[in-house]
Image (cartoon, rainbow, N blue to C red; front, side, top):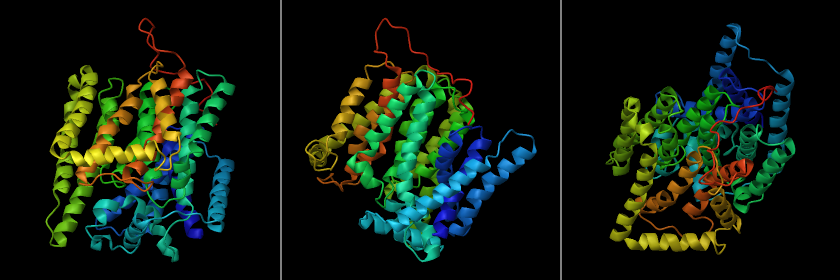
Length: 490
């Protein structure tokens, strides 16, 4: 229990120190800070795995607290206004301790063969032996989720019991905070509470959300970081209520962490970043930081994978070389951000990106139609007829998204593009893995929908908060929402 408490507090306190040093205030410190600390922990752990440094979770925990804590202290000694809140710190420590005690006393866990493979990688990380992992484990399970549970091995256990349900709670907290900061200048407090509580209850009542809140896997963790990147990207260009440096800090670390969660992460992250890259209101420095972390993380992981294959006397898989080249291309794009064409032709670039995805899917369908036919059929069974255990929630979400398209939302493409581009990409992934999706709640695509649900719900609730039907003759909606004078005070 002690190890679990120390692990979680390292993420919360370390992330809060970092995000406050970056400029966040109010509830953004513990909420956005917790997400940032979680991402920081995974990024530090990844550096340990990918370098000769020991991958021991003890070092990961220490660095997750020490690095941001040292930065916070250095800035404070230099005169930065970084208030220390002993009461709030005490509440956080007590809350984390109580949560760990509760989830250990009432263990609720869902697992599968995938879960056991994640935990196997976690035990190898804890013992500094990840390089001996088989090439059937590393490419599919990676190291993100294993890193989360590696610390449990220090106490003779296999997984951290409280972290998965706490990640689910953090998704709800982050969604609530983002909605509050985005809509507070426009709505009365009563209307704002109604929207936030309604959204939280809608998400928390979903069968699949509850399932993933206790399932040893990485889908809700992926959803959490995606919400940071997409929702934070929209807030970056649409509101002034949150410090931009704090947002970029959280987004950058989330981008880095995402690369180590799923094999297709690099492609997904490029798509969700594309609206930011072509947005003229985002500084070139911020764009460069996001792309640099994405490219460097992709290159580092794929290079490590190639080294593992070669060390075991195996030929390096084609997809590893492909993603390695993809990472190099991302870094090569950074100097080109000086070209004004990315902003001037931004809308065309986004249309072309989606068109390429659809055309690629059509070409693959012509070559091998059976995979797409079976995948679409299975997806229909899972989403519409109930085989995927979603009930009516996905159908209702799609209906709400359709209605949201008729409401004027500033910079709506930042929220819409990651959702619509995933549809062709999701089916392209079936071809990349060379097997169709299947009927049942354990299907890969059926589980991946939860990664997009928080983003989709954020889009719908933002549209509801703006509440202005789109008209051809109407004046454009203001692209920035100013914060009230006291919104950044706790």
